[in-house]
Amino acid sequence: MASNVLTVVQGHDHPLLLSDSLAASSLHWIAGHEPRTHWVYAAKTRYRQPDAPCEIDSLTGDRCEIRFGEAQWAVTPGQSVVVYESNVCLGGGIIS
Image 1: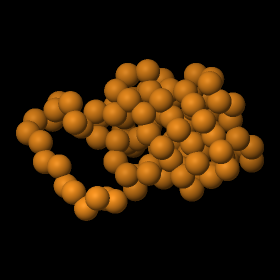
Image 2: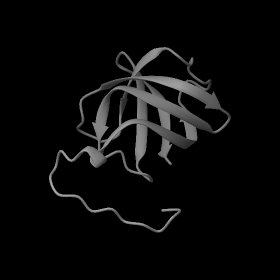
Image 3: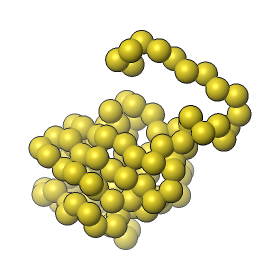
Image 4: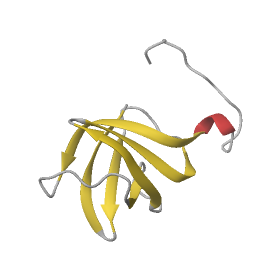
């Protein structure tokens, strides 16, 4: 929380709980190399969440920007994002 502000909203489906993109750092790619940008992958920001179609918009060193095809619920800084291609886990990072 860079600005030290906590926002509280009512309801599970409040628009402020939805994110169509995220930034991640502390990246670790299991294959040992970075995936391609602007390619359709799937990602999860929660353990039991269904795969969410996404694209990696930018990838520079230890940071990436991921854009989802559909807004995702409660994308939370400090949690992990995991990226898949089909059933293969490519790796992931920590949501900024």
